[in-house]
Length: 561
Image 1: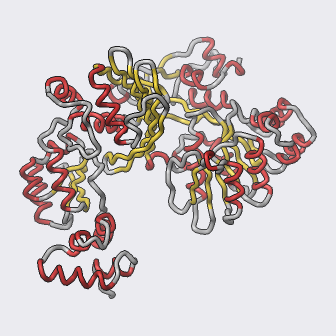
Image 2 (image 1 turned 90 degrees about the vertical axis):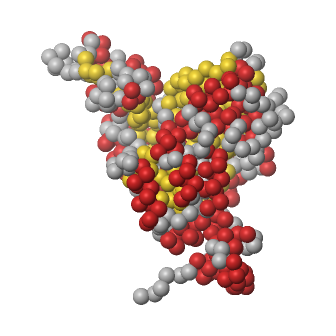
Image 3 (image 1 turned 135 degrees about the vertical axis):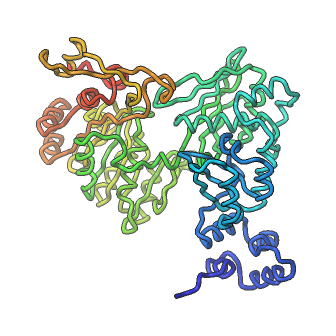
């Protein structure tokens, strides 16, 4: 059996260092006894991240950096500062009784055994994670001894003498405003929010989270905190601190529960100050397996059939925030394989995916969607994703790519699946080009799911029975929202997809070519088994997964009357 490769040999073989650099580091190691990885970093031969990853794979443990981690206050309370300092470890997070702990030597059985005794709770499992020793010591210095709850930090700000306008990028974690912003962002991620709104009013600051598609007011803060919040948000997202007159866009990253969370930041000047909106981009949740999207069986089966067609274009339509991007990423994830070349053109790239070549558009330098498609076609792609069809040139280029033997996926802003046809005609795409090249059109909305812990049954009223096609004799019960601790009193938790999937058949292609109207195409689709979005929503209501009120919020139900 072959012996495992040593750290130095691994770094040489992978091209991070040269044999000469390894020889120098080994000489230093023999001379002073310091760890080889630390020596390589101190000599400037390699970055600390490279050593951390190499050591992690070498010892068989996951590795991470603590530079942008915000530890869970609960996990911090489980391990004393003295214990953390003595054994050079740092609690990161606790979830489902699994405590994630940063260690420079995660294989030290003696330390792990002492840690389990220190916890005094046999139900807690310890999950060690490899972290560079210097980062652990820095984290201990930063986090222990400081208030980490939002309420505690606000009290500290109100009673303390902190200078709210003097926050810099290199500021220590002793700054309460740094902790406040980090904790607000972490809190939003924990609540599964998709957006965070910082909205200054005349005398106070309103903070709202968009959860399951609906904005919820979370906190009101005194206006005295606003200057500090603005500076901290701008520093983190690398925006111009001196500019307050024009909109700005930026990005930042935070590690929450060991997961990398990206934030897309937008500032907009307003009457009472700059308004900030942060879009939360969780890489783990952004790429959802196709069978976990919350599709009903009919929609799922139709989508799988359309994905099986090797050439043509599949359009996903819907308003902003309807989950189009998530659906497309799920499709690409399903099709992703070493044997195919998948390329995307996005504005911007929201979720990086391995093996897939993702390109951001940049209109300022002439790299728009139309020009990008031309460039992509020279890269030998099998599957192409177009972030959005905005004009005739992009639409025609997308369909022509489908005509030349490629599988193309794209988004389009229309209210319904069948509405995509007149929309494409309106922007100048001919029927002859569309006919035979459109795989299908998916229109979707996202509706909130009833909280399974508190939903209440009730007997539907007459108009509800009419909408749901329930017979008077049927003793049928629906469910309504109530609210509990599990759903923060809202009555809804999570979302489901309300879809209509319009698959183009040979008959529909012929009708399209002949100049058939939208109604004629819809009639043929219904004849082939097409279900409208309203019918899809009603099915979810009948199953007890959501309410009529929620479906009527996102879907037009009047067509059923």
